[in-house]
Amino acid sequence: MKKFIISFIIFSALFSCKSQLPQLVKIEGKQTTVNETIASNKTIENTIKPYREKVEKEMSTVISYTPINLYRNDGNLESSLGNLMADLSYERANLVFNSRTGKNIDFAMFNYGGIRAGISKGNITNESAFNLMPFENSLVVVELTSEKIMELVNYLISENVAHPLSKQFNLTVTEKGSDLKINNAALDTSKTYFVLTSDYLQTGGDNMNFFKDPVNIYLLDYKVRNAIIDYFKATDTIKVSLDGRFRNEKTLKN
Image 1 (cartoon, rainbow, N blue to C red):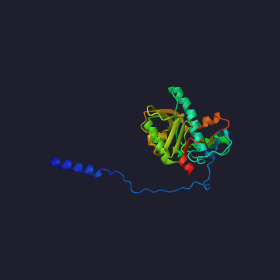
Image 2 (cartoon, rainbow, N blue to C red):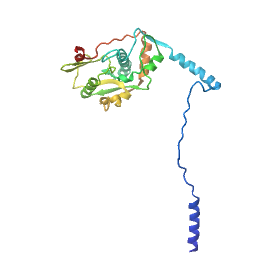
Image 3 (cartoon, one colour):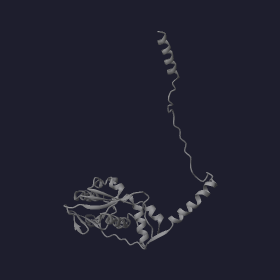
Image 4 (cartoon, rainbow, N blue to C red):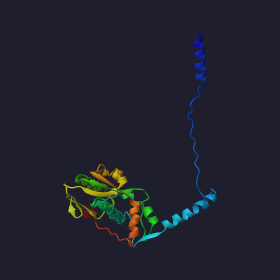
């Protein structure tokens, strides 16, 4: 009995000394406005200055020229900037894809909302490319069945906006339905097609679910922005036009 009492006393002492875990009671926040009233730190300013000047110089470097304004909304179902973006991405990416696989991309498709800024007539700088594509999206090639291609076509018709499409793709909406040509040939239901897009869209971004679960996917390790900059650097003067690669004849007749 004596041993039991001693054990009970020791156990009670240990239990009573056990510390409780801290619990969150309240969270408080305070907003600090960053404006000209905040004094700059000269030491930090002097440290940052050479890097800032280097970035500003790089961003203002002229890499090409456009004789016209380039916008994403200067056409109906296509645009000067959309056509340019799709065509230049195709050109740059196909060099990589062909060297690795011995095959060619059939066409390129991106999203209207992915074009974040226009490019005004005149000199094109590195900053123009960053404004056009501020995201870190990369180029990918997906191998799609003819059924997936038709899902893509139905999506374009349903969306009825100027999604960027490369010149290898030609879609006409008619009174009887639609007429599709890829590389000047009708859709072949017995073959698959290699389509260039971005990694964001490939995972179903903007509800482009036809890009998901392809036959094959090829990661090019090539950012969209880098392709844009590389093309601009290699092209002295940009030439682009609205060529009717996606058009609705029913609308035109009305």
